[in-house]
Amino acid sequence: VWFHLLLAVLAVVALARALGFVLHRPLLAFANNYDQIRYTACLDLAPWRPGERADRGNPQAPLSRYAFQPLPRGTCIWTSDLVFTAPVAAVWRLSEALGGRAIHSVRRLAEWRVLGWLLLAGWTTAALLRARQPHVAAGYLGWLALFGNDPANLLYFPTFYAEAGAILGFHACLAGAVVALLRPTRGALAVAAVGAAILAAGKPQHL
View 1 (spheres, rainbow, N blue to C red):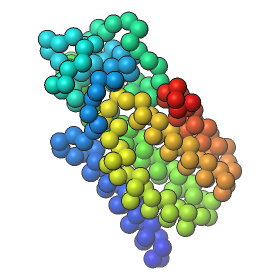
View 2: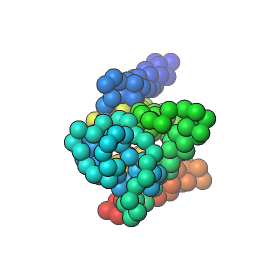
View 3: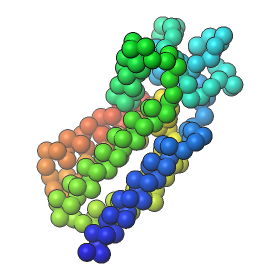
């Protein structure tokens, strides 16, 4: 019983740290050195800066608000992180089509990424328990609670930097590989392969 209680406590701590990060006010995120325009351009998004050219850097630019706007051709750099950013951009476009605001908070992107992160954590924990490896599951949840969900590791989530997708891909690759070593199922191998693909396609140097 005490071991199951330990698993529950670790899971709650990990969840609390993730939710505490994404709900924190003010927003916690890496500052925008304007490299993000290379990735937001693929979605016709740029920081909302009235009176400023979308393709010109500005240290005073608001970091958390984005809007759809025309951008110069050739700016976009394709990345696997679009797996995470494109759905959010699509929801924003739909929201505007239904009469919503034309200015969007990057916090929504952080929430989407954290949801994926937590779903992966839940799958990994459940898979380890199905493999009858409760001690490995406890070690994983301990890592998640102490280090994995530390805000320092999640600061890319409220940004359009490709590193955010790479972090998620790396997590999925390692989690899938560990589970596959203990209980080689198609699901575990698929998670490892998809995670590796997302990591590798995030940036040329990641490959």
